[in-house]
Image 1 (cartoon, rainbow, N blue to C red):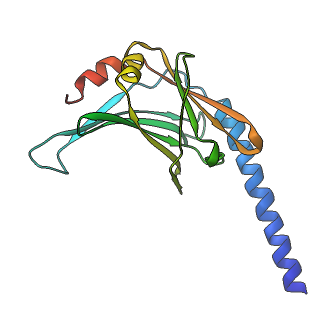
Image 2: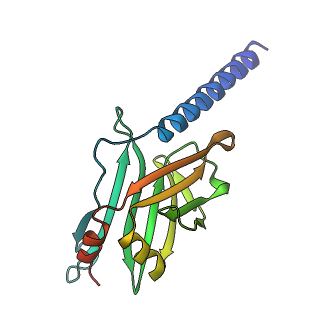
Amino acid sequence: MKNFQRCSTTLLFMFVAITAFASVSQSSIAQTTEATPALWGVTCNNNANPTQLTCTMSQTIFQKGTGQRVISASIFKNAETYGMLLSLPHGIDLTSGVDVSIDEGQAQKFAIQTSDANGAYSRFEMTAKMISALKSGNVLIVNIMGVGNNPVRMELSLSGFSNSFSLMPQ
């Protein structure tokens, strides 16, 4: 009986700790701002094919104070199309998916496909219309649903997006 009580006490403590962590993370995400907006960086290598350069452009937003990644958006080329990978934080409702919009425009819903020790991930193909909007836009808005159905909005600056995109191999 004592072992059962210890086990249930331990589980209760873990549940409270996880819930508290998720709540703190959610409020921290919502309040995350950076002094200067992050830029879109381009990274290229030929690791997959020594005769061909493969490039990815990305922007990552870190939590002020802790330096923990809050969100990262990476753009890559797949054959003839471009795709985006959103690296999302822990403590979100995976079944709600992610809503992506540019400058308060019409949001598009995408599935969250997987998660691991580093967060959750949504990967989707970008249309020509989306790429055009990103090039001329000011902010990429990512909305997710947090624990307890609390909406969380994250913004990535599109400053320098067009220039960085032009560096990607066409």
